[in-house]
Length: 192
Ligand SMILES: [Zn+2]
Ligand SMILES: [Zn+2]
Image 1 (cartoon, rainbow, N blue to C red):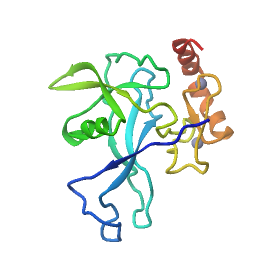
Image 2: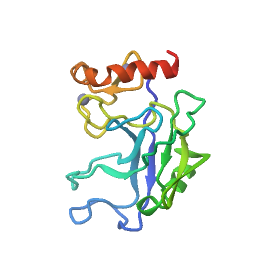
Image 3: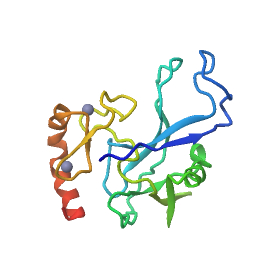
């Protein structure tokens, strides 16, 4: 059984309070989802971002993304002992300032204690407190975001590695040539 997507409450100093309107399509309080993005998805530093949990009639959703959380790095962050959880390097500076604290307070992410210096900035190792199934996925065939763009409520996953997600059989077939080698590698790492 798929577990339920867990929404994240957020308030932003840049947004007014109240119900959305034509003038203010986004208002406080808002609801976000943690989303694993398939583009350039690496197994050791998966791409996580925050997306808006709902569309509303006043927003044409040019930008479903609220924030990109993962920072790219050649260093490997230690994998979680729990195969249903993920670790990644998080960018906590500039536009992401204060986001980690909010996500920790709501039991979405926690720090692993690892850090890596990258030029003038420090990347923070984080682990999801959420488990697979509680965050939204991206179709590895067509790039649709689970919940926002997908027709079905939840996506199906690769039956072999159980780590890549698809809208349907057509998307799985389209994504297979690109996923084939990665699938073997993931199965080896997870010892499936
Ligand atoms: Zn798809
Ligand atoms: Zn696979």
